[in-house]
Length: 46
Image: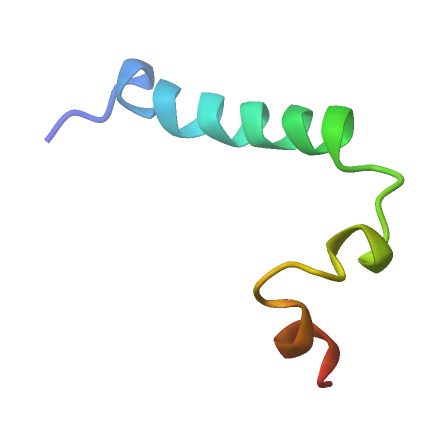
C-alpha cells in the first residue's frame, strides 16, 4: 500500500481547521458561558 501525502491531507487539514476555530472562537470563554448548557452539571461534578 502506498501512503502518499495526498492521502493524509484531509486529516491534517481538519486538525488545523479545528485548532484555528478554537483560537478564533473559544478563547476567553469560561464556564459561566456554558452554565445553562445540557452537560454543565456533568462537567462540574469533578
